[in-house]
Image 1 (cartoon, rainbow, N blue to C red):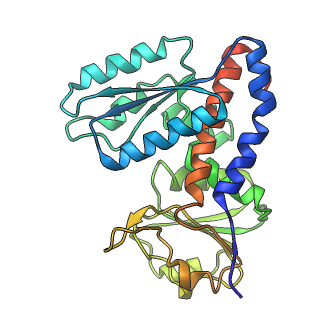
Image 2 (cartoon, one colour; image 1 turned 90 degrees about the horizontal axis):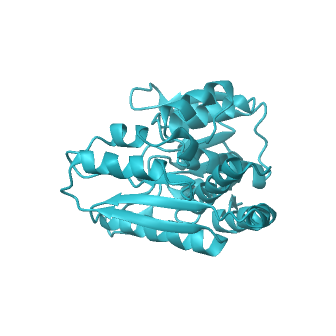
Length: 287
């Protein structure tokens, strides 16, 4: 029997619907949540991602803008732009679209964002606070994974979770979030020995390694929930994940597709974080 599909787009719509009362409360205070995306250069993939974020903001009723700089801009120019946005009262959330052109220090630039406006959750103050379960903002993709698990009714407490990937953007923060929800977590990476032994023990398997087709049916415990965070292009240019979807679907209990799984929920979490930032600025109680 094929695995049940976790429809990220449908679940993201539930998130947007749930934000309605919070947005109306903000409107009553004369506040419209504002998100500004800083985009440097004209990377085609980044153009698509930024457009999707702007459309999501518009659909949800947020104010959004893109501040674009040329690929050959000076790093000081980028830092000055971020500093200006930090000081803008109407800008509640700031996001620097990655990857950045060569020659720009992504770490220095993202760390320049005010932690109170760091709706991507990449600032070290927010990442570090995850250890205590007190992050001001949780990174959007891990937060989206947790939201998918919750809304799909997947038990987390007491479950064995295995994450493929140890990045600061997904793997490490997601591990902390799962631990904070009382899961038993293993983080695997390129140096992990006998990878299949670990993955076959997982009740929840999250693939975030950036390698197309890495997870095969032989690596999955029957009935497990498989969350595919990967975004890759195959030889024909088709968008695929880190999971061999066709084969794994015959083994897993539940699975996310690519596209249409984690991606829509990641954007929904960005919108939700921006609303949360606006609520804190306005002193309005949210969810």
